[in-house]
Length: 190
Image (tube, rainbow, N blue to C red; front, side, top):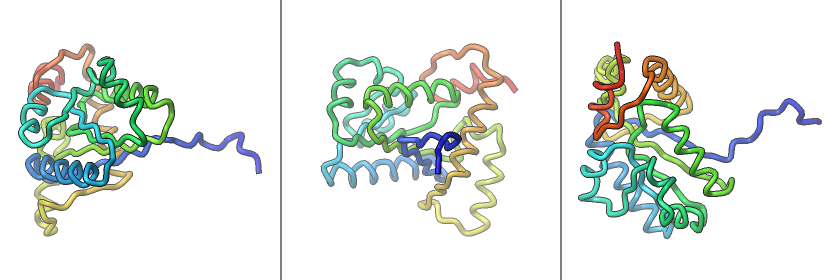
């Protein structure tokens, strides 16, 4: 009847595709990118770390740094002028606030249009290590999960946000780094 207490509808579609290893996640990202661009979709591939951009630059030509993408005027205009842009993140940032700031800024640039955001993550990433990802990998292999299969569910996305929130609680100031591994070593304290 009335929607006073109804949760505000989220206009951002966000999904996580989690793979057993980074190589498979990169391959899936490239396949998804090729499929979207073949269908004439405007796709932006974003990453948080320089080493990730270097690794992917051999197969994907238009990679941008997530945090710089929101400040680069030329890229901001491309995002703003794109019809239903699709954002593929090559990784999560370990610190939830950093990642959320970028997503909120992209949302502002797109002026509230429906956003589609996919994250391509792997269980062998450094941010997953303190949370027993090795045990999960072992369990998945015992259950017969193919390495090319992705886990994708709202519960998985919530679990990743919980991991990021736990990391954020232990990080007082974030030092910029070239890789997620370096970021975890310099910023995250056990």
